[in-house]
Figure (cartoon, rainbow, N blue to C red):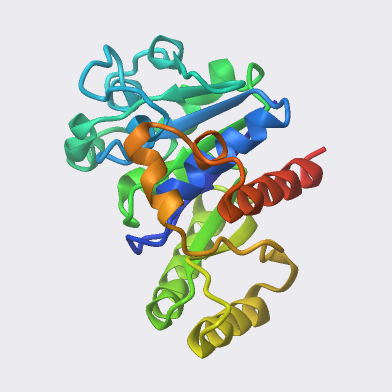
Length: 254
């Protein structure tokens, strides 16, 4: 059975989508068959792997709300061993539509059941909120990767996220675990970065991935070319960081 890993943080701008794209691409590079599921109405993970979100015939919305078989939505990317279930703005109204659905918290897990044996990993880019879509995904995921920016506000939002995880574990998904925490936009020259990183490591211990992701112009440029950083600039420090993070995930799930 393929492992479902949600990449989630209710705070925007922490490198969530960037991490989902690049972890998926790096796992594919290591020979794993990977599905990137774009569950954010902005559709940035879709365009970030070179797929035009305006031209897709079937999207994550059709799978979650329209009960369409997920196989119809899958698009092969130009990158090694990487497929995407695309998303677009149609998903924006899904929170309201889910309210009246019976067993609404389990729509996501039911939709993935037919393809779980076809992939080694399914990486899900969650919306930057703790609404019904994110709850749906966490209820059907095996683990969560949490990208955290090394700044004060990251610590403020962390308690809310962990409180939500505890509720989901107790109500819907008792096996959900933290796969790991990524320190993003890392600048080891500043005291604030080192202080925040220290607090996060105190809280999560060994769950913090060994390689932080540094601030990088190249990492910010890559999505505009529809490429993961591994393919856009293989010599980037960010490429090295995401390869090491993907390696940690692969080794942990052997």
